[in-house]
Structure formats: structure tokens, C-alpha cells
Image 1 (cartoon, rainbow, N blue to C red):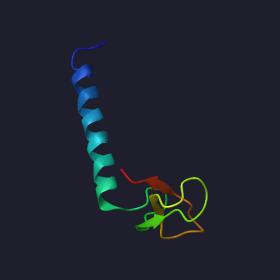
Image 2: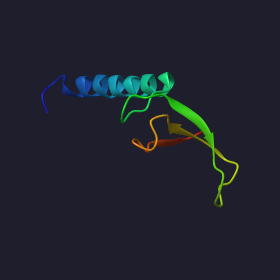
Image 3: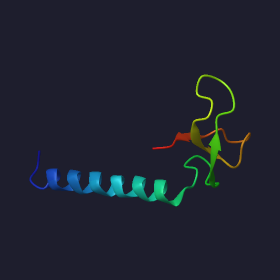
Length: 67
């Protein structure tokens, strides 16, 4: 491994982590770019739990759990 590659790898990892945090904080769907909407599960074992769903549903079915 040439000298300097390890530093570049760490910088790249930091950059990717920042991009991910930025996308999560903007509350946009990573698949289609539409807004994410806070929704509540209406049926199943998870009834009453909240999740984020794409506002472009049913064309885009992206969901994310609420942390």
C-alpha cells in the first residue's frame, strides 16, 4: 500500500458519512427525492408504531424506521 492511501481512505469514509447524515437530515427519499412523511402502522403486529414513508407512494415504496 503506497504512503497516503490510508489517509485518503479515512477522508473518503468521513465524506460518505457526512453525505448520509445530510440526506437523512433533509428528510428526502433517497430513492426518488420526494419528501418523507411520518406515518403510523394501522394493522399487523406493529400497529401504532411510527415510520417514515415516501410521499410518492405507491410509485415509490421506500420506508425508514423512526429512531
